[in-house]
Length: 316
Image (cartoon, rainbow, N blue to C red; front, top):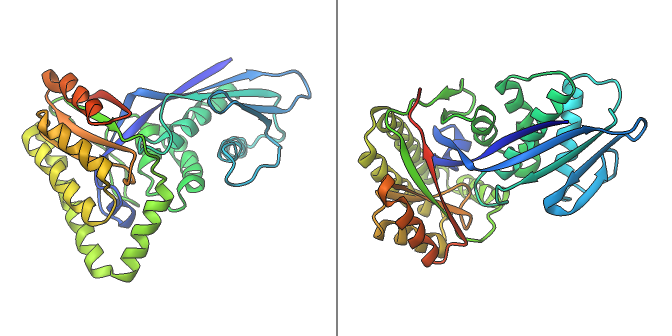
């Protein structure tokens, strides 16, 4: 039996603009994670995929629609087997589960795919590099999101804070001082494909306005990188608020997100913004360690379906 895990993630800065070549910053969230377990099956059984959270089980060769919850799992397995140049489907049982909430901007699809890639490749005798895992998971991200930026598979596969520019080498982010984030869940699904598609249509109809917004978001991400590297947390909070204003202008905020953002700031957060696609999903707030619990409580009182606190540790 081989078991592998993968964390969730949040985008600190740069969502949506990252799709258009601007920089973004993302960090792993270890409080939530996906798990994949691979076990040998009886000879001739082929491969069975079990998703305990979804209460489903099916064979790898089963025919499924592209919108079926298991479709991406099957594709991920096939991609791994192809990468490993397996001549036939091995007799295995793959069981997956996850505490990363779906469609909430925490990278649930990337986390599950990363756990599957790691568990399956290890069970078959290959230890893939983080870059190889990321490339395989990106193929799954295309299924989930259509035109993904590549940031989710990168930060989850490497499990390190990253500064990401599409098409450029990955840069692991240097964190001078640890900082804490309170993450509040609106309880509303936020399908990335829909929000990204709407922003793309807006950009196509008015490229000058949207490119200006993307430039501003990218500039904030670049400035935030320096603030993280120098340990300037107050500046980091200001940048989060500024990023949120621009995301709202892109039309991806929502009343539910705005309510949680206001509650976090009123409870003492240094800054707050939505994370991920928006229009629901999660928001994040930069908090002092001694205020983290009170901000999380304020988020729940303001209607958050859930609130967790995660630390971004100092670089070793």
